[in-house]
Length: 295
Image (cartoon, rainbow, N blue to C red; front, side, top):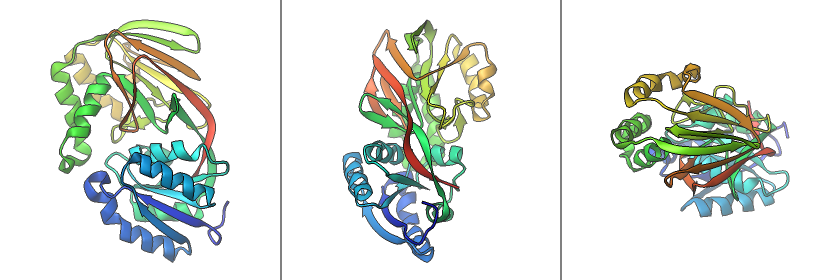
């Protein structure tokens, strides 16, 4: 699928994404896609289950599914499309973080990203999975569970600042937890901050948590953050924006196809900004699970 002439597009939009950014961009996106010669059908999502249904039906009808929203919508749609042979996903960034688009080299302006829908090449990428729930970016837990919950509850006008806001608020009440992590049979136990299983490099609006992660290597990069004081954590945290935090001896990175995580107190596991399960949990890589339009 390399030409635009026969490309029919189902535009699945989350109007509330990015504090209304997706809704504001929608008319420009529709106009640009049509100007590029594409046949466009638009549906607004009511919730994630509705988004899955819309995406699955459109893919089974032979349409490219273009998701206009944040990483949560993207992960949800990707999970639905992996069940449809030959399905193709297009990415139109309309959320607050847009981390998948950033890592994939897709323009962060949704109108500019329309050119990738029309002219991009469909390339296979891996997904991650927690049970039947797929994710496209990073699944994490521990301190990240608290930070994600606070960020999701934060006022939408904070924009991308919700992520540092969530981190700082969570830091106040945080107490270290005990984790048991098994990666492809290798077991690690530690007391510390968090465990993350990364299909992609980034999350949280530009944080490069797993700088060596690749979308097509059939594995998850498992980032463990071990014993740091709150002051050391706060001092190290800004380095995650360029990926140099992994040089800290308290940060360990493993790699494998299957990751099992236990914790000494329950944590909600978040991926692509949304809750996908609780500990104990098994996360696994799904190699070449989906084709995505890339520049």
